[in-house]
Length: 568
Image 1 (cartoon, rainbow, N blue to C red):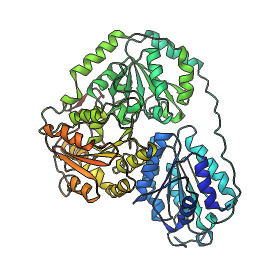
Image 2 (image 1 turned 30 degrees about the vertical axis):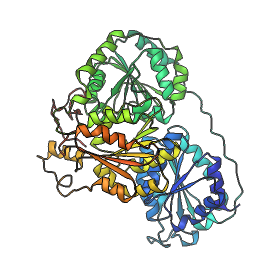
Image 3 (image 1 turned 60 degrees about the vertical axis):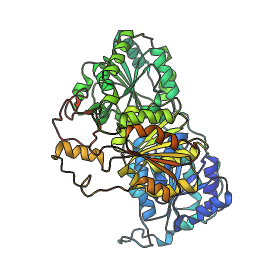
Image 4 (image 1 turned 180 degrees about the vertical axis):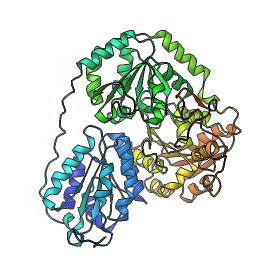
């Protein structure tokens, strides 16, 4: 069959439910094949970065690699931020780029470019993909496509890229059925589990730290069962927020740079830490790794050897995929830890998230996030952008069983939420999705409002509008004597309610706490229609608590001050 027809057929065989793209000359053969095949919908967006973010979300929601396509040159390079997001956040994705005809490629010539828009996207993508291929002959395309879907999901999930010259897309190939996923052998773990069992028997204040690897391995139910079997409470990283329901009695809270104050204090007091699928980066441990490690035992499970004893030395490590770990963990002892759980409850009561900004005039964003959680009980996912609103959401959203929390963690890219929410919506037909973004982040991919309208998506968009780039403004307040260049000075935002109206989307604005209930009611009056709620927040609102950089993670702003310069 024609190679582009094979690509369309293979995507269906691998379970892909839609393909995200922005049209361009070098992918027209594939687009035509998908159109004629008619079984894998093509979702056209207005910027290739949006296609990549949508594919990222699709991979996270389903476990099947999300697929995005782009033409050569600027189309391909525009995918790179989204590919990087998949790479850092362990999202399975297959990215297909069109390339100029083989006879138009510069090859070994000492020139920059031969064909129009010829760009070596493989060289650019290799550092942020699990593997990237240049297709050189039509005959090798089927095997490469099969291998791409296998590589994207095995081990730590992530993105792959296939660059296909246009002339090879119209060549003839022989159809090859998809290959079965390889079965990996469980690691040797006897000593690890013996030591962990012994540590649990003597521990008085143990904690589980659940990271993004739990979601990436689709083992949230196994995590909950493990916590219940051992009696050990659970704290979550930003990427692990949706691994245990908010109301579960063993869920403690969100830890890290902007973590719940009580959860960071609990982590500081723990005498045993079981780290599952978290890489223990600086936003989870703070800069003072010695204080984080303290005198406690740390057992660290990760599928990549390099993540264990990386920033923290002396951990007892197990290189394992989490399904294998949970399958072998049934013989661990159970502990009641009643005194410890009582202490954790007291900490949460002493340091509630809704009191961190209790003197703030107007709408308290932490209180708002709790109200949003109540109104959004039917949402399939909360998709959150990057900035202060991201931290307020992480601190205060009440995620129910089955609800996903998607955000750009490792890449931390503004503009993630709107296209990613589109991807999440398309993976859960008939279920609404809530998007949360700041005014600055929303403008980064605001053009995708048209994609929402065209596809009639039940997307509930919430804009936390403080009329500035708040997280960097807070950084400038701390370190640059409140010189707000480019965050407040030289920045502006439109009225998003009016923007929504221009696209034919119902929009609403709330200014005061007493307006919130009615605004949320209007947003949800038709659960299956798109809607936008603009929430006006004080420009000078800060995201607290926040680790005081250079101090232990138990010492948080505003009660402690940083002793060194940080990143935001």
